[in-house]
Image (tube, rainbow, N blue to C red; front, top):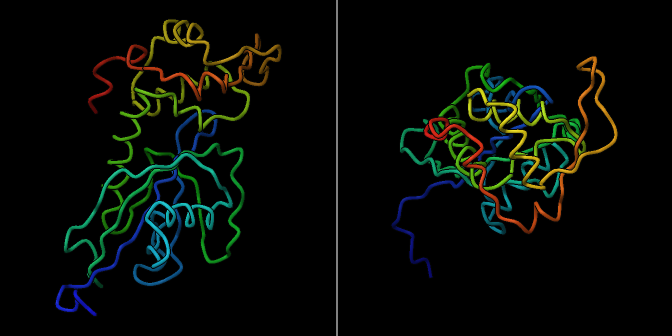
Length: 234
């Protein structure tokens, strides 16, 4: 029996805010839509939740369709359902943010999308309420990264302290006390020093580190003490 036949119909969608780190700055992956509505305009990657999947599964499917990547760190960051958010129909969207090491990023496996990385502070004009989704994702990312070391998902397998500092400064839009930050990070045992050095970006060379995955998986850390308190409020 159709118990809901007199209720209003709407579409449920997901939109993915895909953050990446190129070693120097934080970026976001956008697509130029090849379909209507809003054809040839820049957009987040999104799509509709299918009858046989939940929103998280839909977001994972859409992410894989664009990047070819699976098992990526991703979580929802808000529901966007203003009645006027789309003029072509009633659509409620659940936004998700994902963290990608850009060194793992593969070119799009589907030719229907034109994708490009943009510096987070230099993104083009976007459709619908996608700018608000990005701001919400940034807020959620800041809160979560203050409690757990999730930003390491954005780093390559081996990285330098200056890269970690640049990443955290980009996320929190602040300038860190590099010496103090490095001291606390090293004392956490979260990273392991390697013998190799990165000699491309400095004459002296900065030592490479790798993530201590046992600590990462088992130990719940707080990064709140690493960051200026005012930087967590933005």
